Length: 555
Image 1 (tube, rainbow, N blue to C red):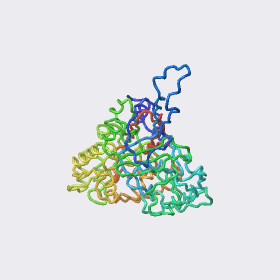
Image 2: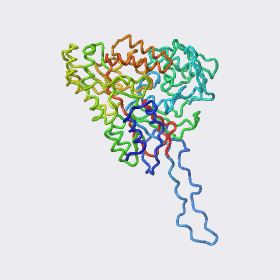
Image 3: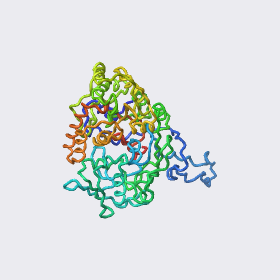
Image 4: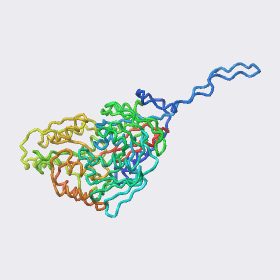
């Protein structure tokens, strides 16, 4: 049964979306319902909830003595059983596994989700899209934009007892000067961090950074300076933050477990434990939600929405996200070293059929910046489906045939197998024969990073256009081989422009060129679809596909 909340979120997709609209997914309070206790998967001994979460013992375990009149003893000679303990744990699942534990050396959404709970950042984003204080109480930029002064919260401690000070900011951020780290591209302008006192950190940059605040939210987490100094090579393998939850264990391909930090500086969480489960198979995730084994499912398959809506114990949350599926092309090898061949791919794919028939939601895309985000271009429209034009363009590009390599990640996105197979078929119909390989996540990540493909398909969830433009175009971390100095210069200009209105125009100018050159083929803007047990309050989901259980509870 559709709730009012579901209707509100669904209606967002029917009109032009603003940044505020897309952030309205926000904090979601769901109605409490009476539910029988659902069995949870057995947890390891180390993750047992604290004793305080157990049901209280009755005050008396036997009946009181009879009155002096020798009245018959009551039929029941023991006190009534105590009420069942309130739920304080949540199990959440999505189709993605962690690849590595270093927050600064990966691009995986699931790390954002989990590290948001273990760590804190200097700056956070609220549900309206506004930057708000995190570990920094305030900040101020210098007139020339080259120095940002952050005043830090006092009395904050890491889970191991280390104090959070400006030394932590310096040790954390200056790691990003190591160009081998995946996130270093975000911080190319970083010069150094000065620490005039324990609670003042000054971030100095070689050029103004229009992206500085957006770069400081997740996943730019704050690490303990002492922990880094003690084990600089792999300190991150045991995550120790200042956040609402403490790391307990990670059992690869099974679970990632966190327990509440009762001393969190924002207040003790209401949940005692969160267990994340990477479940790649759509039907397995849905079945777990229906049986009660799982409490929240991220990435509900669109064809299962109506089934779950019919379950009185569940509710569905959905809205268009700042996440788009695209094809990355190997532009320094035939056939995609020619613009016409890249344009042929644009015309070969029927985006609208994929959106309406396979996904049953979302919107066809035209360019790299999603609707609702800074720099979105109203003037660019999705390429129309025209297989004959695609064939003509391939001929013009001089493509004489042959088989190309097409790779896709298993389960990362809704209906990934079906979407990849549809794209493969569209390409073949246009004259691009291909071998499709749907790969386990780690294998896909390795192949994409090595440039071992002609085409790859993946998504790009962002909250600032620079995050994908710099990473995947200018810095070319996935080795597409596409070069256009005019676009590279615009991307750098966007990075170093503090005025956000001017930044938006710069990114629109860059997109005009990208649209005509086609190094990436933009397919559609995805929906975020969550299945949630009724009775869970305070579940928050952001449009850049990150969920937040720090303020969640069972109601």
